[in-house]
Length: 445
Image (tube, rainbow, N blue to C red; front, side):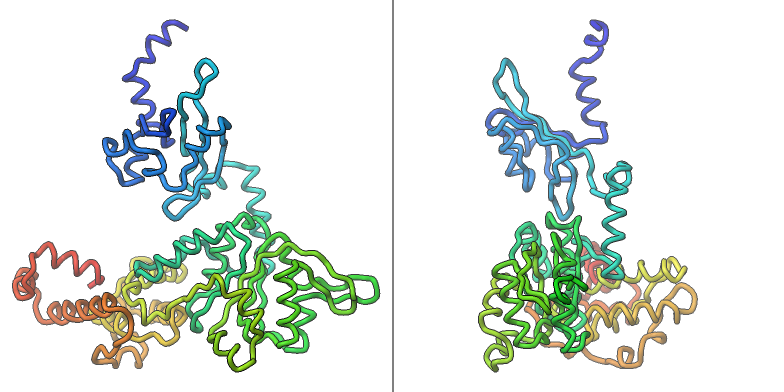
């Protein structure tokens, strides 16, 4: 045993900590960092010398290392939401002579998907969850599926991360095709209800005379013959799409369900307690419907406290390059046509079209042109005529930053079409060649 202790010198221990799969951090009794390995620093985008001596909460978002210090209780395999994803972390107090002198933390799974793959027990559980969810939807989105660099999208993601763990109802407003269901599923996926059902009901897709039975269920005598969507969502989340289509009489029942967590199925006077989180969506202004007496004011005020306004694609045009690349990669693989690229003229048309059908229209167009492409190059010829024929940029809405981004892209496009020599283009524009290349990459030109 003594020989092994001699082997474990400070240098050897440092090598082990630096090359191990896990990320490590050690804090003192004041929760200030005294050690953190390079891999963790790289992920956190901070230099080690900057991290050492800082309070751990100033370096690692959502950390609970200081709580471990205060409570003296270890946290094993604890979910840790950091930089847009959940990880699993261990946090253990360091005790010497009965006194807590610090704490040790490690990230044991950097992605929850790793946990799913490596643990057979968890894998079976997750497979069962996925089977349950498949009863109610064809696909499921998560937080990482929300793409975009615009300030609006970044703010929405911050809001979702904040409100997801709560039980508060959420109203999602946005035009048709903006992806409201994706945002709703992202909220569910980040909540502690993620292992339970995400159930949806579209008020515009079900005949009005069947909506009450579909949502609240139906009894015959003293026998429950049909569970409504609310009961099916027990312990999970109910997503009510196009809530503005819900009749006034049912709006009153929904308000009671939201306030009292109780429902009354058709055919009985009995009330049933339920535990459900409600997310609602609409493609029109509920505030205007309240004014016109087509939507209950009390229900509106109950659900509007947390409202996500999903912008139309034309108002976040700087998100287009990432969206196009994401969908292009996905649909190319599905079509068995890897390596497909979009040429410069086609890119210009796609980026300067208004997309009245929003993200859904973009997805449909990309799916089609991948199949129409000749070889591995998508040219302007395969674009739909209404997108191909546009000549000028007429969009004048959006923020100043968004409009300047569009104009910059158009200017670069025009110069690249008329001149091949990048040095000459940079000189004409009064910028360095490296700056020109950065802008070309930013606009995917």
